[in-house]
Image 1: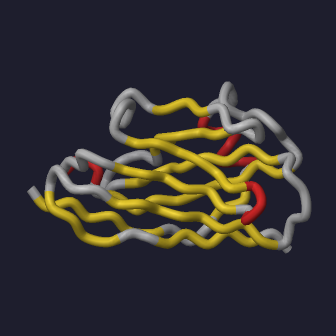
Image 2: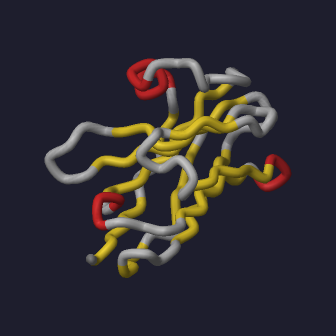
Length: 128
C-alpha cells in the first residue's frame, strides 16, 4: 500500500519562507514522478511543481522563481522550498506520486490527479 505523508505546513507572514516535505512509503523503486498541488478555498486545485524521476522540474508561472522542488530518492522524500510567500499562496498543499512513470511533467493536471497517489495535505497560511 503506497502512502504519502506531507509535513512542514504552518503560518508565516508575507515574504517569509516554508519548507514542505512528502514522504512516500510502501513502494520500492525509483520510477515515479511527483508533483505538488495546492487548493485554496473556493478555487480549483492547482499544480505548482512537478519533478520527474531524474530530478527535472517544471513550475506554475505563479510560483516560478519562488518555489523549488527537490527529492531525495534514497529517503523517498519530496521537498518543496517556498520563499517570498504571498497571501495568495495560502492553500492546502498536497503531494502526488505517479507510480511507475518516470516523467509526468507534460501530463495534464487531470491525468496526474486521476493516476496519482495522494497525501492528506498540509496547510500553508500566509498573512499579509
